[in-house]
View 1 (tube, rainbow, N blue to C red):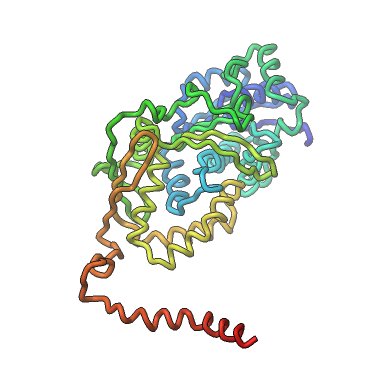
View 2 (cartoon, one colour):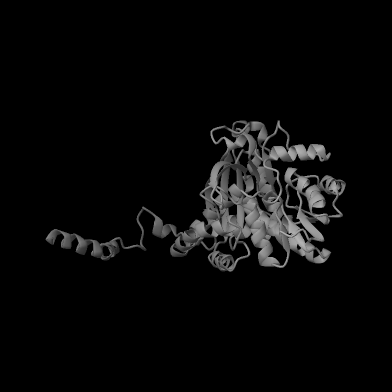
Length: 402
């Protein structure tokens, strides 16, 4: 792209890639660089991140606390839909990117910047997530994607650049993998993890205890839901971010939420990732438990048929698309009756539903019982089955005649 850029807002984390990118933008584009960092509950020292960006040459550093917005407006909507990608991934990174992009674009407007930049590679999903969001929110902004422009070929090249420019980075040859974190999850990929046969080192994990080392006594947790949203843990009403943080603590202590996954990236490459999502794992199971007694069968089945498409839209970066808006409205409409409480047992890496109740429950014991009842005439099933089997009967008779 043209080098005619006056001011760029860089999505900055202080990690290896964005630390190099900040310096590279200054040298290559000779433009003013504003670093934008989002507090998504990743637990980093953001004062240190700010100082590092200033030391590297940023003209300004913007840090915004987006924890509550992230959980309330991105995580919870996805969990109302039971979103999960390829059966395992709870979309922790995928959900964060459109929010970062949204505030990055807003910062560009306030600061009079004519460009935005990110640290995603040309092989990954994040480049798509960032740039589709930029396009949906402000298509007039120029986008700089350094991994698609510069001559560096590997993270080893970046390490050498960092050393030659005196830029401290958290990735070393002794810790050769990258991390991405927020209040929903921690992800690990690259380096030694690129061998899908190699078991991750136990020292790598941060959010969760090893299941073998978790308490020998199970922990019980109760979660209340209103319209599909969690509102209380063990009877205590909590804000969105605080509620998820509480579940992270409970799940992490009991070794819940680890996933070792080889997933299909949007660009067509398979990638091995390790994830820690303790609170999200608990939340999804609790939500499904309350749904099981409060959602109409056909609504539940129809909604479930839409989950793969909904999850793919998030994974592939279409959060701000019209089809995503339509699907979200559909998912939310299905949650109108999802009020109730779920009880779960956490024990050495497992999360098991052991109870569910609701004042709006569609589960009626007098109908469901295997004991004697006065409300269900079992002979009614005779005609029900005859009608269901009519087309099968006709098919069998026609086949016999042939």
